[in-house]
Length: 469
Image 1 (cartoon, rainbow, N blue to C red):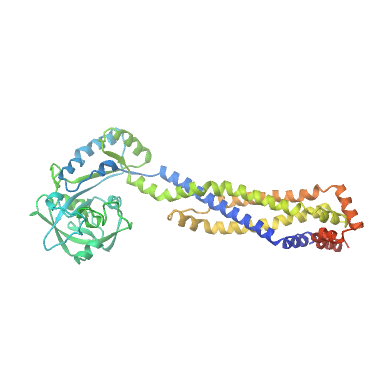
Image 2: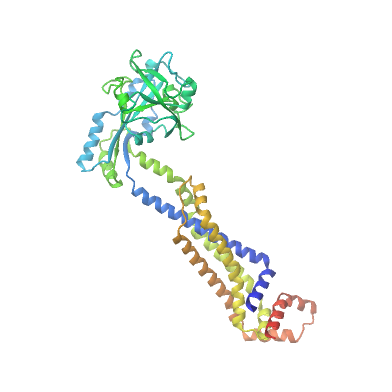
């Protein structure tokens, strides 16, 4: 009781130092937990990357795409053909790779027709004979291919998704913006015309209305599009069979009826994808590259996490504990260095060194462990939501292993600091003890100064004397 009572009195006598010790311990514990949770999430992201089953496409490079002119029909010479994709597939078979699936998408511009659906105008529209039309009719073979849509992932907000089994052969999806402009609803019929022959029309039924998940369109694909067909809100999505059977595409053509084909090879593992990519790169023509929508999407997902780890990872797991440890050590030393009179008078009064050592240790333990406990609770419950908020929703869960690691290091640090405080009592020499006794037996000539030097210890000495009595 003596030890706890005197330790508490000393802590309350120096409230700001006590509070500062608690706050530093709290911040170090919370920061360490958060930093380790981020690092663990980053390690998990790397493991998950290696476990991806990536889809592969051959696409134009950014440099080649930048030369696009939607009013110049000669642009279709850049489109890949089925023959090109057969060459790529021969690499798959030559490497004894088994694909998990093969999907495809294709697109052509189509014309708006009189008394039917009208496109959202571009900023610099030209005649449909030059552009092929005001809409882009884009087809997918599967839901997954639709999700990898380069114009952006979309959500159907009214009606139904496309049927890839052929149950709705005329079904089409239009954007909410296009539906609003034309006062269209699910079930309405729309008519579009061939890019090369305005008299050849295709009738479609609005099966669903979509909106894009991302608020900002790629550059030149939104309201800034020069041509109406390049505005992604003018994209009409259909099943692959719907476009294929429409008769408005011709792979051998040199006009806009030549479809822009994209085959998607879906691999079972990263190793298979890398093996294929290394070989296929030699067959890909200039202006094209092999890429993976799966990998692109995953890297975009973890990019905020990696950026956060690069900014705060070292700071929270290394710098903060070191700086916090140094500050706590400084506070401990500040709290025990100028207490020779207190120690000497206590020993003269019969208090043992052991008791005084325990008192000094408790003075360190109490604020440090309280701060550590609060920091652990805050970090344990707050690391996951805070991490999700700072990484765009990526999970940064707290695990028992991380918690116990910080608990162990925190308690060990508190013990070391407490031992350092106790050493102050152990190192108090006999000569200093006798000086303390002389001071108490022979008052100084300057009574006021003597009172000042003993003021901080009077309460403790009084407690010591009462305890011994």
